[in-house]
Image 1 (cartoon, helix red, strand yellow):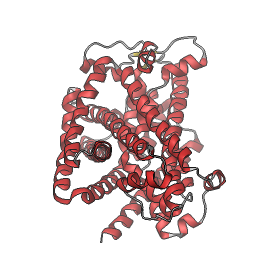
Image 2: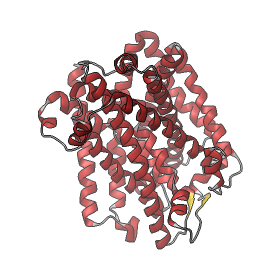
Image 3: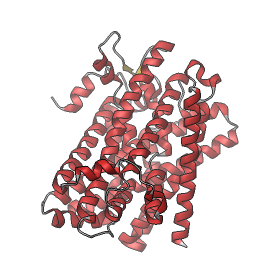
Image 4: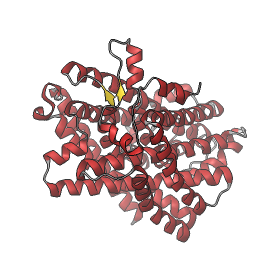
Length: 450
């Protein structure tokens, strides 16, 4: 029996048409067994966290991790660790908001803010989704070029096909989509597990690097990359997505049932984000153990890493595994981005589109600038466009984080589930840190461009 079949058999997902399936994300379509043992319930709740985790290992993060490892050895590993802890907190708040209020973040915004504010928040989120999709297009196109020598421009065009992959999976059922995403995450994790074995990193150096060092904030170049890692950690649309898809589970709508749902959904989220941390950490570790060790401190582009891995490691499959992981990461992130786009549009505007229509709309908006840049500036232009997409994502993040923290700190919305005094302070501190770091990242990038 395949993994997807096994995953689906235990889901009890009941849907009819593809559009109804997407609508059912807010209609509690996946049954949770009552009076079941811990592991069986955890399995039933598992899935949404992995759909969220793909945003933390998308191609947009790869160049930053490669630059961190090749330039500064293992020193910035602590930044990846800390940034994931911040992500775990924010995703916990997002899933708690969805479970307690029975509405996602976009719906909560619509009911709380003025129409003009909601329209602005929707526009900002749509820009972030298109920017993220743009990064996935570039990552997938580069991967196809590396694996099959397909021209970049052709690869960009082929990425539109994933709209039909998403439609097919939605017709099968939401649990099949989760299984497909988890399978791709498994491929990425396995590929980088082999890469770490091939590169023979220093275990002691890795352990020491998990503790932050004052040098990170004292060294301008190190600080620049550290802010880049932190700034690109949380995807704005992931907060909207997570608050919605946790409602696919049919748990009792009682205080006890919601408390249990928050507990299991948080475990699911933290396990998935721990895998994302492993992948990002693995990229940095492989870059440090391979490129930094060989004196190649200039490796910051994905293509450069691919071309150097095999000759430096002496393992023929090293570069191929790297490209396969890149392709899986690109496809994973673009599928979840489409779901987020539907959720955001429906939540803010009550406007519904068929899944394939929404997918083609998002992809078309991202394809146009990519085609133009590739046709005019070639590969170097793509790398600049990839950086620009991450800047755009950073700019939009605060517009999702601040409402999320605001709502989960509001006792009128959350009732007995409102954040504790300690969590309230912590959440606002994290939000302000992320906003400040993203703002500083924009200043640094503006200075670099000027």
